[in-house]
Length: 128
Image (cartoon, rainbow, N blue to C red):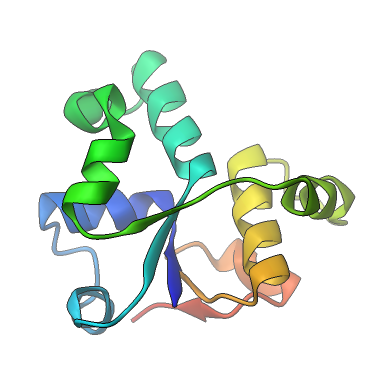
């Protein structure tokens, strides 16, 4: 069971070499439960609307289809996730990352992410 950070999800979809081989292999291993957070859908569509992800038009148009065609599962945002995200201490201001951190902590799930900010919150981060 793994959660994909937004960039990891987009890099997987694009076949981008910035996604390390070990993580690519894990994501593609049959039987691995791969989750994409509702926060990732929110982030992709928000950043696309703002012009920060111009190459993600197709994904932003139908995030559910992009998740489903890969055989991944959506991870909804629950009240427990929201409460944990809102209560996280520290300087991290990014609401998308705060939600992903909260989901990892509440669900005891590791995340595939380049972002070292997750480490300060005790999240198991898989990278490299």
